[in-house]
Amino acid sequence: MKNKLTFSLVLAVLLGSATVAAVEEGTGIKSLRGATEIGETNVAPGIKSVPKNQDRFSLNYVNQPPMIPHAIDGYQVNQSNNACLQCHDVDVYRKTGAPRVSPTHFMDRDNKVLTEISPRRYFCLQCHVPQAHTDELVENEFVPAGKFGK
Image 1 (cartoon, helix red, strand yellow):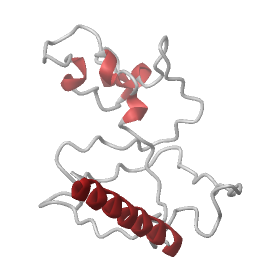
Image 2: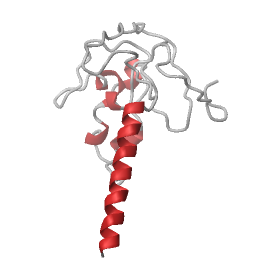
Image 3: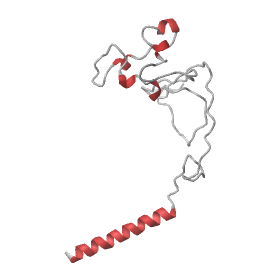
Image 4: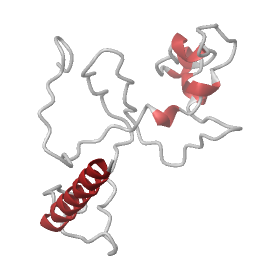
């Protein structure tokens, strides 16, 4: 019993000192904040301008949510109003020429088809974002799958 206790204490001390040494040495993790320390305020980069209308970017993988090819400044999407549906809803997309909301957006989590857009798909901007030509934040070696991205 005494040997077990001694062994446990020695092991705890060794693990504790290894942890302290690793923290003091630094792990070499690069931050997107650059050299700015955590306690300092970092200046945010400017917002990239999104053209009013542009050609749609091609998709890069199966089931990728399409990106928004136009500016959305001032679009209101909240619990009582969704400005996206003024052009993309099933009742109006033919008149506006906008892509129709996908039928999958009318299914609940049990795949039951609803008459209105499912609450889990109502907030468009959780998946669909405005497209813009921007610089990569981190090095990226992503290659589109198969015939995608062409």
